[in-house]
Length: 211
Image 1 (cartoon, rainbow, N blue to C red):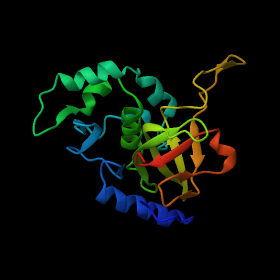
Image 2 (image 1 turned 90 degrees about the horizontal axis):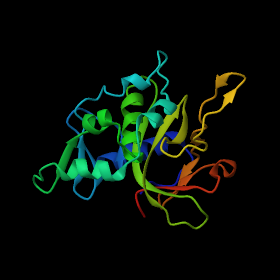
Image 3 (image 1 turned 45 degrees about the vertical axis):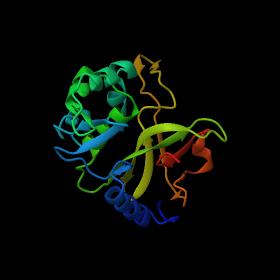
Image 4 (image 1 turned 135 degrees about the vertical axis):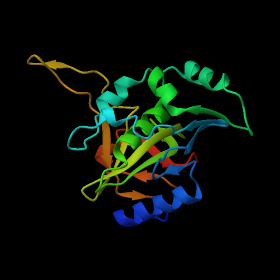
């Protein structure tokens, strides 16, 4: 995996290297025509890299609330979309724009949307990671997609699909935003575990790759 290091640039370099060696685990950039693995023989084709522009503000901020609310989590409908596609050379390929426009999606679909919205920022890096996430102590975790991105030289783990709080609240007549899981990354262990400060763990563990 990635050599353990607390140097942000070394972590970024390690992720970029892993994206070249294992593109099904880490993606550093999504171009038109690229394939993103969903499951065993299910793949998305990035047919419109600009489709997530609607989630960007004028100052290049990405609206996580809007991405989360755009998708209705319905695994059966997403799976059915793939099963209706002819298998060619062992792959069932669906244009990403199809599920995006249908608004069906889970963690991967949200992570792709964030990647497409954030990846062309002139001063920052963004990665989509296919790994695992556990929500209890010693939990082995489940297959899960999330993002790692930089902001002003610092690294952050961003889990769009699992905000800390899903409910918006009205405060003094104004609707407050959801509380998203955006935490600093201090390290990546030899085994691929994402290390975050203890106060940000809240019982979660993330890994690069499904270990």
